Length: 283
Ligand code: NAP
Image 1 (spheres, protein in one colour):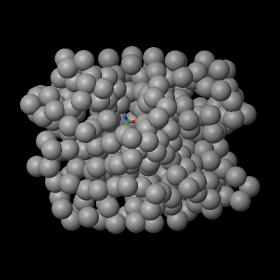
Image 2 (cartoon, protein in one colour):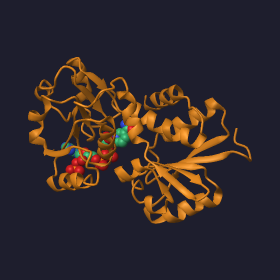
Image 3 (tube, rainbow, N blue to C red):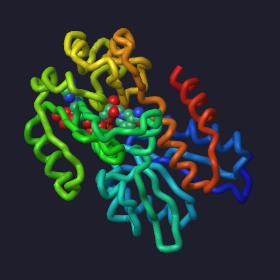
Image 4 (cartoon, rainbow, N blue to C red):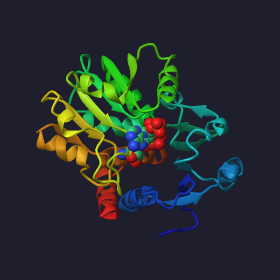
């Protein structure tokens, strides 16, 4: 029940109507019985500064950030986690006495389904795509301690810019490749992550990896697709047919949300309820 003491949380984006976050967060809030409500806020890029000032004025406790504000929010924060700085994007903000603080929970979300394996020191990760989500995946693979991270993309200039953006992180062994190099890379791959929209609804009959290329993966390789609808994607269907471990994007979505809610509420959150609410919404 919303009362005079209910605290506000939310998500800003432009557009924001597609966001699944209100469903997931409000389901968790209701389950815990916390006196919060989580709302969608459509904020035009030109209005970002005014919106943030307005949020401070009305005492919003925190908010998520989706496209196109993940980078442009950064100048308005008084504090930023090292993860958000490394990725160059913020997806979670909370109020502090000094102003807004921000982090990026996508890395935590990405890593959650990989916790079964502890030793990544010999692992070779291949990341397909070099957009925003690929940055969180690279940061995640680096935090696992992967021996090598290979980023595959279709635009040479963007690939070089991507590599250059990690120059301040010498501990990360990152190389970039064009798509036609993929077949030769796959035979040593430990973790293959799709961060492109290939296979996403409505282009569900596409896959970033051909069946013959998938055959090149070692039997212990993990196939990970950040896409959560359809579930599984064609890429993961084929990986399962090869008996590879297949991880879909739903868990990352759930876990990045759970990590944000833990920051705001400062208590454990019902991850199962969040997962279930998302599955029902996607159905
Ligand atoms: P983005 O910034 O637009 O990046 C997309 C990347 O895919 C770019 O490198 C792009 O290449 C590449 N790409 C697009 N179409 C391609 C094609 N036909 N062939 C080859 N490469 C192609 O998007 P994003 O924010 O990183 O999101 C990427 C995907 O991850 C989406 O499907 C999104 O739903 C998913 N995602 C899931 C989660 C989760 O929680 N599960 C979180 C974030 C994102 P160019 O740069 O050359 O255009």
